[in-house]
Image (cartoon, rainbow, N blue to C red):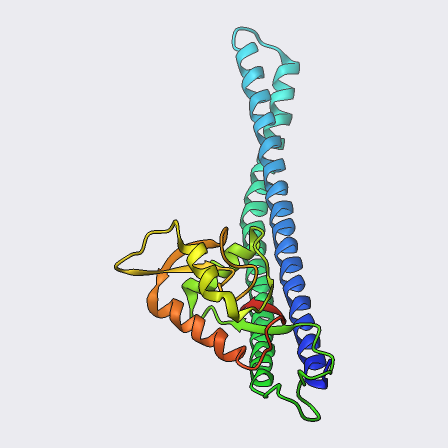
Length: 253
């Protein structure tokens, strides 16, 4: 592996760390929100129990003068007043705390996303280097190729295709693929054979036909033509110097 690809791999793994951080933040946000709402629900349940006890005493003592029942009702009434105050405070303050926590978690995730975009831009710049040889580039003749290459798909530039790739990868289609330009046309025909053309949209497949994992069984959806072709052009440009047979990670940001 060349020095450049060591850097690319390290940056890519740094992006994995940011992905993990975002998942941890989301899990923590959900747990804190659940705990806050659980406290509010517990107070509501206790208040409902006291209300029911007061109703039961009122019903049972309506035809008789029972000092014990009166005392019990007074005691429960004071409990209800306390619970009313506690419920108000827990609901108002709990919702405020949850809103503040959601905001802080959102800021943390935004910082992680910004970090990944900086990393992705760095990878794109490194991919501009020609892997045709030299002291820093990858040499296809007798040298050792990189562990894998990294290609970036920007969801801000190509939202529809990026979302398709992200969704397909999340349901089991590969994130790591093998570059194989020679049979791309054959694979594209196979992947699109059962999907009708549209006068409005392009048919977008993942994995793309340029990868050996593409072809029959690829996930195909309709997307805006400009979006689809822009993504294809971006990916092709980033891979322009990758040799066939290369292992490529296609990462959506």
